[in-house]
Image (cartoon, rainbow, N blue to C red):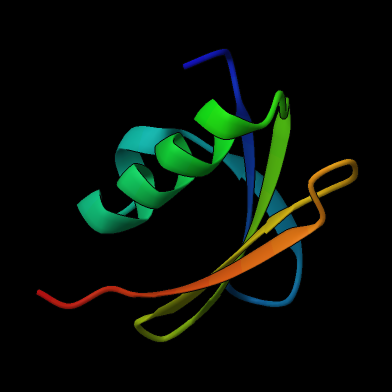
Length: 69
């Protein structure tokens, strides 16, 4: 996987986070999505256990991932 910047919004504002801090299934989804599209930044919105992963143009993809313990 290329060097991907992950911007996480969990309290209303976006901040850059390391991939290792995200749950395993969210990391796997980001890895799969960015492998198919040459993205350098990914936006992740978190609401409790729900993570919405957004890839900007040219992909324009939005994927919801539920993270459970």
